[in-house]
Length: 220
Length: 220
DNA sequence: GTCTATAGTCGGATAGAC
DNA sequence: GTCTATCCGACTATAGAC
Image (cartoon, rainbow over all chains, first blue to last red; front, side):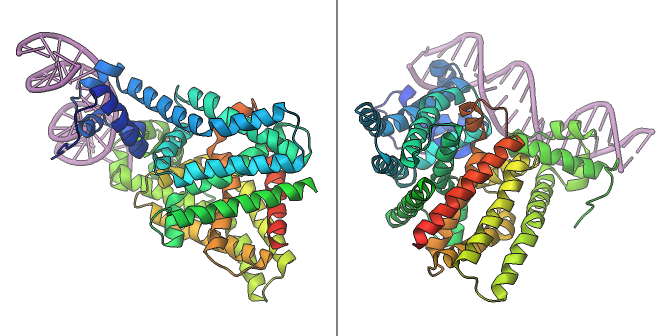
């Protein structure tokens, strides 16, 4: 049976959020049944309507939590970049260094962290089937990150900031996202089991190397 | 190939395949109800069990069709590359040209073709929730394309073919996939409606330019 | 081959006891 | 706050008429 060995120290609301993060991430909104979430959380099924107004409400809270966790993880790096910009426009090599550093932080979190897969799956599913929650994702995460990257790319390539800078930013992000989204393909192609620390390091090196070469090549 | 070229007959089976491609792509397996598929196809709901043994059977046929269409579209380009390789290992600049050409063909199809979104969504959903059908996708599409790209990357950078070549190939593919997967983000960030011919061309230029610079920078 | 009618299952939400 | 019992809708698949 669903032998629930968890301590009941946390209240039902918190346990539902934790279980929701896992189950929504693994199965997606539709296949994540309230029965499964409540069983995993060790609470009664009626607790979801009681605490969150319904399944939709719980899902919204889970998305907000995920975005908050990612944003707070990238926040200090982005603030540092804004600070440097405010102190005076960075030259090309400074901008490149900042760009590579930001990408490294994103890679560390997206590929290296154990939570990343659950987080990424929820975001990816919102890309496929945007719900009301996508607004939060775009405004708090995607838009600021893309804008910061685009600004650094423009400075590093000594070209004016434009829509093309944003498209370049997205293409660079795609290099990272590929390893998150196509995980199943990577695992099969390399006969691996998942992303070990060693593999994360290899991926990090490859992406940073290719990005640096791309930016320098464009600038020239 | 199958019935390609035939006029759309009043054949219920063909109409179900066509509607299934659309509805599975738009809504995913779970949310694609047999009611909706049959309504869109203009056939009775009982026709799915009758012709395909059930919803699963229809889905399997749709995936096979999608993979077949993509593979046959890339087939001639890949065969050309194999032919050149057989005639003697290409030098670095030849390999780079072949690599850029293959990527251009993939971009043209993945971003430019109107069918691409439906195709891509079905494949992406299989990445998230691999079913039995994922085997077909990996063996007939992912593995050959990644191998071809990895071979060209190794030749173009004058490095030995290794797992790192495959990872590089995936990162380059990620640049393309980003525009397919994060379409919602692109649309909002650029205040666009979708990918027009003009935007496809811009994306093509950016990806090819960045890829060329990346490969040349690594080689050097 | 195509239809109607319906069986059988499972989903989220609610009412009301405790 | 938490529980049991239940409702009601939606789903896939099947049986059998035509």
